[in-house]
Image (cartoon, rainbow, N blue to C red):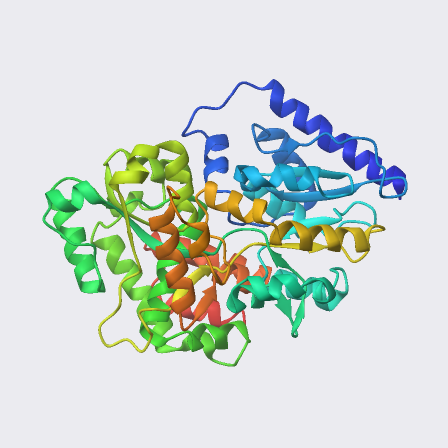
Length: 464
């Protein structure tokens, strides 16, 4: 087992060195794209993951060299996470003060999805790993491959919002603790473009359509869509379904209840997404899915697009790329309501948080569990999330915001999370991987206008 760990460590180090040897990739390239939108997911086999690492290694892995092991017999804690954790300036201090040697390896989103999709042999899995909760965490909990953290979660349970803690639970037991801020999907917009068009941010779907028409007439792309990755397009289907039918529609789908995909709200949401495409909301209909992910952020920053529907992490990306625009030109608002819909406009869809979990087979399981609990509840770590533009999912956020440059956005997101009657995990995370894969493919076809809403519903119903 130690030989396997050493081999894995050497492979990670080799790939990291290769990434450092390559020239820096300018913004807009695939590598730049990965750094900006590392939150999300797509799945492959581990062999494909290694190939992806070799092909796209620029900035996708950052390996933290560690001192010789002292607290763990003959080894150290290995932690795998998404690249964005490195934006948290408090994380390094937590690693240094962990009390055990911790080796952090970070990955771009797609590569990480591929690695985590593979089961991994004993000794090849990380001791601590980041995840999104949902179906994957449930699968691992039922298989006994992830450790039960209920015994060390006491302080976290008192600190974090109950709904966010629930995202790391399976069967009432805690298998993950929040490692990111809360991440609802919200509608970002360019304040200057809206002011010039004499528009207010849309509160209803009808107002959204009107804004689309206005910006089209002004030769501005109404909504930047990072559609090449598929999951940004899914955001519209998720929110429209919720606004039309309420959160129980997807709850039934996630539970595998017969006929759940055939709920009228799903078909109508599919129809409305195609209405947006045909209306030119994302540019010319044929171009709706051609944008690379990072280009969408740039379109908003440069005034080339008026709006972008994205997770709250977009604020941190904007603040890092163009602090002046983030401070004065960037606006945000909840997803609009739909007239006659049964859903509560205060409902949220997105990612309550990402989580840190511990491998049940780790030889350092107890040390890893204590490390996770201490890290995510420390003031340095939580304040570091704020410094990175994230919103810690704590019950009492206000004392941390005094004089903080991101306070306005943090209050907005925190109030949404506290007030939300429902916070639905993004569908492609909440559903089992095979179903999520079909969902993303069919969503792409919806936006390409190559299938009808009825065909979409039929295809998804066949996965039940």
